[in-house]
Structures are given as C-alpha cells and as structure tokens.
Image (cartoon, rainbow, N blue to C red):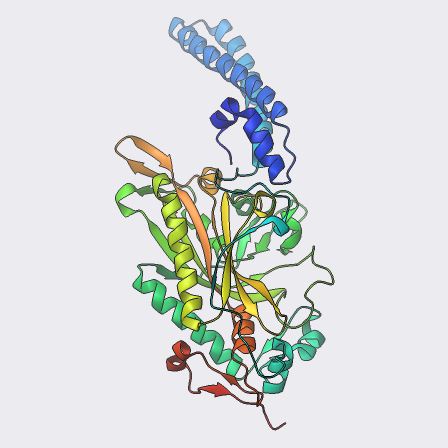
Length: 416
C-alpha cells in the first residue's frame, strides 16, 4: 500500500508512475476522499473531547444526545476509512527512479551475459524430446490424470530435482538464510496484503474451498506468498535485520493469460516446485540487498555453468507490487532463445504497509523493506540442464557441481 502522505504531496507523480506500469489510478478521487476522511476524523475527535467534558459535568440529557450523534459519526468515519483503503489498495507500487520507462517486455534492458550460447556439432533437441527418450518426463500420462500443462518427473529427473534443492540449501544456509517449508494454502485476506491479486492478477491463481460468504484459500504461486505474511502484524528489532529465508515449496498457476503459449513440455505448467529467497531489510539497505540476491542467483547458475543473461524490467513489465525487478534468462538450445529461469524484485515497503510488518529503532517504529528472488524454479532449471548438457549419443551429462548429490554422472536413453 502506498503511503497516503506521499500521495498527498506527489499526486501527479503517482498518477504518471502508475500509468507507466500500465495501471489506471484515479488519484483525484483518492485525494478528495482523503480530505473527507480527515474532516470526519477531526469532527469525531472534537465530539469525543466534548463528550468527556459533558461526562465530567454529569449532564445526562446532553450526554445522551452527544452519544447518539457520536456513534453515527464514528460509523460514517469507519465507512469512509474503508472506502479510502479500498482505493489505496488499487494503487500499485511505484517504480524506482533508475527503472526505464517502457511499454512491455520488448523494452526491457539486457545488462550482461554469462558465457556464449552452448554450441553443438549436432542438432540439439528440446527438453521434452530429451526427457521422453531418457524416460524422465511423462506428459501424456499426466494429461490423462490431470489435463494439460501437467507432467510426471520420473527416474533420474526426481533425483536431479532434489540435487538442485540440496545445492541451493547448501549455498544459502551458509549465507545465513533460514530454511523453511511453508504452507501452500493462504487465506484470501492475505492475498490482498501481497498485492499480486490486484489489476486482474487474481486470474492467475487457484481459489479453493470458496463459500457463500466469500471465504476461501488460494494456492500459492511461489513460496514468497506464504513466507512474507509469516511476519504479519509483527515488529522486528533493528539489530535482528536483515532477516533472510530460503523456502522450498510447490507452486500453482492457472496461466490464464497464456492460452496456447509454451504448451510443450514443462516450461509453463500449472504445478511446479521452487526454491525462493525472501529478505526483510532496513530501507537504506534495499538497493544493496537487491544486488546481493541477484548475485546469489547468478552464482547458482554459474555453478551449473549454464549460459544466461541478466535482464532489467522496464516499467510496463514490473507487475503490481515491484519497484524494480531483474530476471535471469538461461540459454535454451532446443528453443534457440533465452528463457526466464529466475527473477528478483524489491517491493520496498509496499507489502509491509499492507501486512503491518515493522521494525523498532531508537526513533520509533518503521516499515521494513521486503525483497524476493528465485534460487531455482526447478522445472525450468532442469530444462536448461537437459538442453545444455545433452550429448550426441542422446545422453545428458550431469553438471559437475551436482554430481555429489546423485549416484550417476550422466543419464542415458532407456532401452524401452
């Protein structure tokens, strides 16, 4: 949620920055409603003072009249506050000054590359053909059971997944991250605090157990969705920041806006596993933490020795809560293009205001800044390994850094 004081002082900037994100916000309505709310608040406060005076004077008749009037005014105040908060919830986080203004992903910036794209002396296959030949990915049977955009991982692919989990946990726990396996169901009210469900984003997530009263749970789209609100309504001590978590969980996406897109294999599926990083930091540490999380993502893909590029999102590709976002895109030889495998964002104090997460220092209580980043999106990382490490004989060599976690050095085609 945006700071209402900032909106009062910078209405034109808020209007423009939201528009740069492709989101329509009526700041004039917010300012007008805020004025009405503050006028009502002043009126209620004056009436409360008057009530205290009347109470001391023991004027019963006047006290009764004032009580009825105050109750009515307090009801109006609550309604006005709810109305204002509803409008504020629809204001996106604003881009940081260094973020390029752009319409969509076509205007994102490529910052740097790691290694040249993998070259082969044969025509490289895509991950699905490799996976089927190795008997480690089964899409048709998953289709029978669950429908489109699902897959079974089998045999060596399962061990490869947990090797990636062990690698990420080993690296990140040494960096001081607290490991967590979080719930995958979150309350509807929590989704509002995260800010991903605004501007139509709710269409990408699964709602389960909905009742007539509108109660229900959402399946998380990433571990961040249940790690961030873990500290809802809590106050950190300044000395305990930064607080960092690394979480492993399954994630679920409807992929409502991607009909017909990337339907082959396991690139874009409804269910997948992720290892996610979340940081709670001081405001002045925000930019430094963002670069730190990005460096960890790069370290993991450098350990896998997979070519990638780092991309900085423009305003039109930021999403609702992010103030700045980087993606790592790995080279996929079977597709002959770079594809997103990780992202890392700062949401500044946007989520902490909505979820009431603060820290205490010498001068009082302030909102923490929150950042999130992908260590590994397992399915996409397996795709990158299969396509970059494929051999002419149809086998796939295991990256050196993962060999200590698995009882094989390569995966070979099955005779059947």
